[in-house]
Length: 100
Image (tube, rainbow, N blue to C red; front, side, top):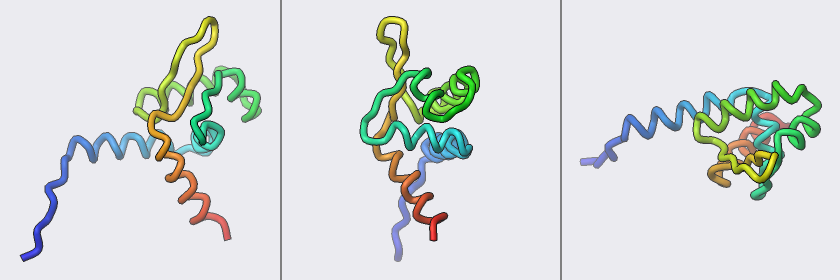
């Protein structure tokens, strides 16, 4: 008899929500810029992406709210970083799958 591991539906729901949050080209780009333990401010990220600061803040908020990113306030700046560094492997996997 094959023993099956009981799946925790709450954990699966959290995982699905994280993947939904990541599923946008700009959000994937944000994750790429935060690889390797980097901490970047909204200003730094918006300059790297070449998009409006308000749009950058919107994307960062979604990623933070869904548990993909954490933020830390330092003076006037808020710095964003990956909550789990292993998330960058998802982006690496996607790059591998989409590049020939």
